[in-house]
Image (cartoon, rainbow, N blue to C red; front, side, top):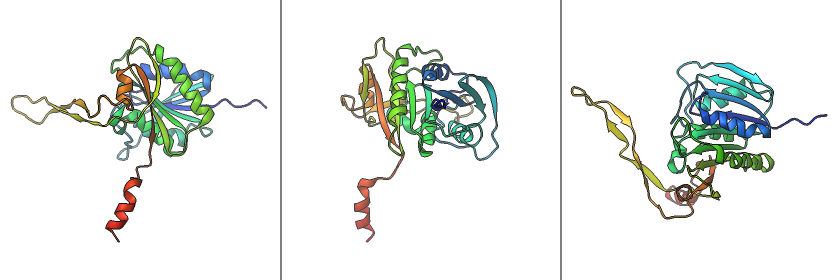
Length: 255
């Protein structure tokens, strides 16, 4: 009996037409059969948001041997949930988000719709990876990243990941990638986050913008250091939000 190829579920937050999605499919298609359920337009910054106030729908875009593509009117997390409920005929071996046009390192992991895809897959017990490139343009060059992306996915398909743990992978824009570094999340925050777009008679229009304030720019353990020095940053990320280190102290508070 012929062995089934691995099944890879892919979504993103830049939408069904994004170059990063097409490139991800090109890099990963040698590893298994692919099902895509992606938003029908951009959903950046949606994190793990769900659509609860209105119905959503999906439709088949195309089907060729080994690749089936659907678009969905919902959020990135909706796409994963709906794919599991409707179009997947078996449990996927891997869930992948990306390739995101833009950096999802450090605190961006909490806002990212790409990582919303990954976290939803992780919560469903599936090994999951998010890929992002530090370029917000419509036409980044993904060529150098391709072999790394394929190898990282192949390693996870072979070895798996611990329960409730996923990978957040960020790729710098550089002429030559130096390799991969395993990193922790950089400590920092966004500042100057709003630009006032008010006209003369109205002061209530603002555009989300901002600058990232790195609290530890010289720390070589962090994802920002790796990216700033030409390395792909892989950050193992847990979706268990329990602060275990505080539990014993809190028990003393409430004796």
